[in-house]
Amino acid sequence: MNLSPSDPIIVQSVLAGDTGMFEELVRRHQTMVLRFFQLRHSREDAMDLTQETFLRAWKSLATYSSQWKFSTWLLAVAHQQNAMFFRKRARSVESQRVDGEFEFSNFLSNRDPDPSQSLSREEEAENLWILIREKLSPDQAEVLWLFYVEESSISEIAQVMTRTVASVKTLLFRARLALQKVLKAGEP
Image (cartoon, rainbow, N blue to C red):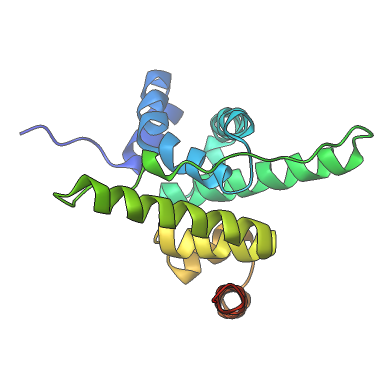
């Protein structure tokens, strides 16, 4: 029986000098971080930001506390990287619109025996997230993503977004209302 060590155990190993174990953390969490960035960025920017997030995580690994899930801590690091990206872009004279296709096919499960039904659901999900990206605020899109796709708890989202639990609940409520209005406006 091969039981892989938990994330906090791996972090302890890395901090104790077994730096090769960090690769296991990257392997476990890189898809989650990449998907997080693809919510707002092109695939290329998302890949760059994912790499920068893991570099930042490596440098600040000693700040991780095992009282948190490692994935929550890592998403908080990603959230900070995202904020820095937009601050840099806002300061840039040649700021350009960050755009890109959101690729849901990388992570949607394919449980249907009928591939056409699965493809149809993937297209609907992709279109929904594109609509969310275009019509809702970045914070609303992020909170919906963390809650529904990453299945993070309200308290985990609060840690990631550096907000209070009450603030996240309000943001999630308002994001749902905004999405409902957008969807109703699009009905024939």
